[in-house]
Length: 276
Image (cartoon, rainbow, N blue to C red; front, side):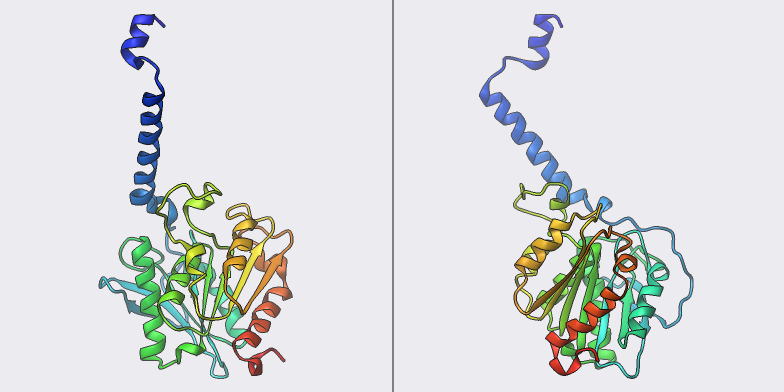
């Protein structure tokens, strides 16, 4: 490049100029990540259903109607409030919900705004409002005592689940294949003072027993996230590390160990409720 043209386009090199440039890049990425990352966090797919067994409609705090499924088990001591992962909806996870019902639980799950046939568009704040609407349905409409509710968050669903567990009383919390925070799925070291779904902070604030489940070969949310969440969680707590499991095959790889871990977790909630 012609030296005069290079000087015109780039200018004289200096440490001050380099620092300013790096600061500009740092701030630009941070601002973009904070305000626009939800387009990458939430990736709703076309609805997999139009009608499901036990389907109902709940009203979120912003007035949007969200789809939900309530699978009642008359013999259940506990109700699981299930917050699902990304790129899936109630139709996709119905087999998992049915399996939990068969294990002896009543189960309520919901679709975030913009997922399935739920109205609206998904954001971090709205996802928390959606799980709150589901919680209020259980506690106010169904009159289920909070200590009989187990909040279960898988993958991105761990974010709303942990937010709920820090704000309202619950009997227990299950975090499966989830992350320490959104930005730390990209960089292991936190480099910004703000983040999305700061699970590593929230799990330290919960006031209930915690079960952390993670696959050792998770290709989406690396295993160290599960280890860090478990280390930060207060006692009492349990963990299930599934050797060889990825992000979307964990239950299949775990087999009976998955249901056994959940049944065993009941012993932390109430020793009289442990599996027979």
